[in-house]
Amino acid sequence: MGEKKRILIVSHALELGGAERSLIGLLHALSPQRCQVDLFLLRHEGELMGDIPPHIRLLPEVAAYTVLARPMKDTLREGHLLLTAARVFGKLAAGVYSRRHRYTESMVALEYSHKYTCPFMPAIQPEVEYDLAISFLTPHYFVWKKVRARKKAAWIHTDYEAIQIDTASEEKMWSAYDAIVSISEQCTRGFLSRFPALCSKIVRIDHMLAPAWIRAQADKCDVSGEMCRGVEKLLSVGRFCHAKNFDNVPDICRRLRALGRDVHWYLIGFGGDEELIRSKITEAGMEEHVTILGKRENPYPYMKACDLYVQPSRYEGNCVCVHEAQILGKPVVIADYATSASQLRDGVDGIIVPMDNEGCAQGIATVLADEALRKRIVAGGWQAGTPDQTALEILYRLSGD
Image (cartoon, rainbow, N blue to C red; front, side):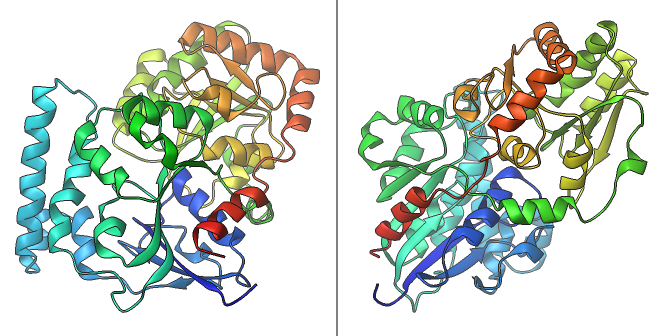
């Protein structure tokens, strides 16, 4: 087999999130017999830091890269003058671009924050030339500009048809990579609708989760005391943001109860939409039936304890939480977002329900009323998250193995 190949993976941090848990699964899946993996995080932060496998070498944190996620007054006080100025310039430029294009949910500011700070960032492991360098989360400027590697790959984690970007700027960034990894067929379609010239670079690698680790985490504690007894317990997990659509959960729950279902819906996560969700709970009169559990370092005991896992998102790339719920033997319902058909097989390992609140409630009620259907879709999802050896071989081949 020859000597081990050296692989570098770069990501932001290891806070609670689907992409971050997918990264943990990838780290578990990569064989220490075939490759030596270095992990560089922009910030050594997050609840999943303790879940990095022991065979992965975590590189030291570099102060300059932490500047991107901290208040500018703090970074100025620490002497990061050029980087802070670059962040200010990027923010202003993104605002001008977004206003010109009448964007309301713009992702341009995130891209520009990396684009304009990149020239002032130090090189990452400049003494090493890696066989393969992976940029796991966009923006992908740092692996492009600050890493030496024979091959470079960048991951797509979202539906590019559903987000607002600076297409010309991002195309230049993506074009710098030898391979662009898509996590689903629909993600590929959405990406190529924006960047058709990059078709030849696309490779498909689904999320590689760690089923044994997920099941062990689910067994770590009993959360039954935190959840109501004698009701149908629904659960959704994700960031409290526009994409996840949790602001519509209270109205969907109200409609479910009007259909005669005695449900209690739990939300795990955090983010800027929390106050909006709370106001919608009050507006729908669902204070006794929708509970925000907030940030949970280990969401898996709650997944194990629920009766139905629901992903009501407006858009997704390939939602990790759905696969995790399947791993834990839970029936899964998702909304009919653009990439839903590549998320699961409707009626086989999950159910796809309409996006509108009334249709969503009707669909969930149908699943709750049909025990045979729930058992069938649980049985259909038993292989969820199993590492795809063919996908792993793609990575090993990219590294030259």
